[in-house]
Length: 523
Image (cartoon, rainbow, N blue to C red; front, side):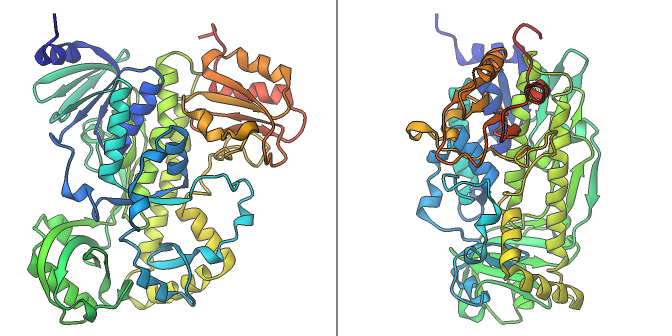
């Protein structure tokens, strides 16, 4: 007899899931994919009944993806599904902004609106980033990412229930009971990926510490009768900042300490026009306001990412101004780091303390991004001190070392974890080695397993990898460029846990392996 939808929902309500995730945004979906790839049962509860929203589409939903995110999508076979970056350029960077550079150059990004050029970047400083590496920066949109990740999650068996917001939960040493609009669900773990106003964070009593806003930001889609009255690119003035880019996408920052955004008032055509005239010091006329949203530079971070069986990721764990578009990348990095670790704990394949490393590794990365955001705000203020600092940073960013530094930060190339080990590659993303027969290393990581990469065909390394069963696979073969390496231990998230440029020290290797994996039969 065929099971009805009502019966399926009843079964879902009483099933004990490995993990319940609050929020079906990109972070929640990507975390669900990572868990399901490792054979965990996952339920996502999403408060919105329908995933589509104008604010998730061009131009509002557009996001710049940085190197760690692009690597993560590539290593899970999802990168080729992104299409937006093949059709259009980012509306956040106007080609007219090139006028702020001393000569015609290819723009790579910006810091506080100050552009840096690809031409100035010294790629030789990034010696572990091979020519076969993925792009350092791509654009996508929230809707595109959610469609791709939803499809993958459902294909892996993730259950997604929309129109159900978590209202409460209770945990004990064995698991949790989660309430949602008259429904009750059971799970072993709960992950809050439900955004800056996270119900999981608030209900769980997590402290959300940080700084209050300096400005109200506005993202609007408008029709302007006389756009020629506005200067091209991103403009800092004595009253704030404005930028008009395609298609009729107007961004403004008004340094009102976030007062308008916190007032809850609607963003009206009259308000936007008055604000634009004041900031631009023109009599420009807006004839239509199609879409509008406001935001602030409030910067807060949960003081802990875990309370027993409850974990936070993405905007639920940290919020900051969307300057440079690092928020989504930060959240997806959380998901990539957390997924395999939580799955290993659930399946009793984890060494003691593995899950603690989620916060140990991701908290400093989040704190650094928040400070990066605060630093941008500090030199965008409409006051003499900020203008002076802005001029100095502009000079620095137009030097070769300066552009290389800012690009490395904006694109996430410098992202790494402080892991034990002497090799400088340890804690960094593994290079995309091109192996014999043209196979790329990233293509071998789609199963989400750890890897022991052996360039010398060392039988003892294969024997070691075999002790860990399906947790780790052994890959042997020469590479087109080996960067002086002999062997590399790679975590499921693509992070190098150990590397050696000489005959492997087996004691050091075994010690490194024991940090992340447990042998078969010992759990």
